[in-house]
Image 1 (cartoon, rainbow, N blue to C red):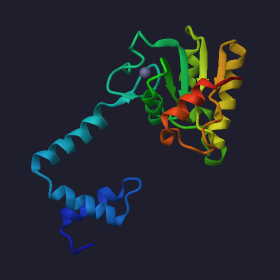
Image 2 (tube, protein in one colour):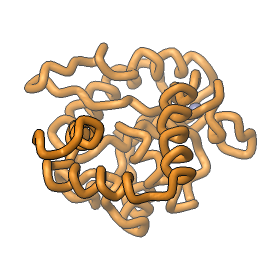
Image 3 (tube, protein in one colour):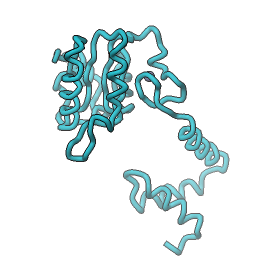
Length: 198
Ligand code: ZN
């Protein structure tokens, strides 16, 4: 791409490294940035750097936050004794959008996948087990209904069962292989309300 000046090529290169961005989109985005007002570009760049520098894992639920405890874990109006286990912060956001869940979460940041070589120690399971030492009434497993999600759900339920804490799994109204974040709120709510004890 030597028909572009160095700095334009570099910008295009950076964009093309992002997931889902092909060569054409990278060019389109790069030229869009170049045509944006300077202040807007500076504020965009600052947002990128600030987010990367300040966002970390909540010390309790492992979701991404810019504080030690995320807003959900630090909210005492939430039922801190009911923990919903999800795969990603995006899944957490999907359940929050329903506005009907009042418990707290635990974000695994992935799912067990023997095929991809992802084992129990590669996701935030140890942190979940540590949380169970405290006062917990129920763990709701809301991993995806993909093979990995089901494998993870089974693994977690086996770990928790001996503790005597109630373990449930969201209903299978969630389409198989469906990413939770793409499912509408009504379906999510139905899956949550129709959960079954494991
Ligand atoms: Zn948290």
